[in-house]
Image (tube, rainbow, N blue to C red):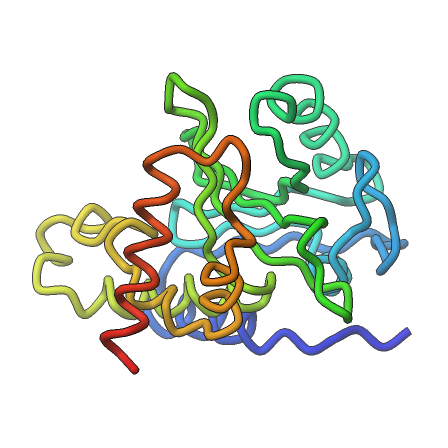
Length: 220
């Protein structure tokens, strides 16, 4: 079965290699997840399935990771079962968590309910630090656009004037790069249409969406 191309993922790999940034990829399962597979009740995003056909897990630049799926372990299923039991009711939204930021309660997830005609789902960051409940921030219109966004973020970070002294703290992801998120035309359209105005969306989520919209207007 032919897997979709992942140019954003390939760009991320190239950026990490060229800059000698930490990058860890593990071998895929002998029988990797396929498009249409269900994860804790969710239909697996086809681009996420394409990633798992190429790699069993990933970690980039000391920070961002994708959950491990191989012949011995399925963290994707385990994490999403835990999410449904622990957070989904508070969030008021059905998501499929596929990764996050190491040692932090920031998770990356697709939103199955917003899948397009090809089944591709937008990506959000979910923060569990707020007392009022999780905060959901739209990041990309597809999983591969998410990979591309992180690649562009790393490029901006490496060229930042304070990178040599402050490292990764010189430019926070995604908070300090709404202009990079705003390049995703389809995501901006979804935000404009109110598709991310979830019942539990709080002030932080709405403020982030507004920053992305404003950044998009500036670059048009």
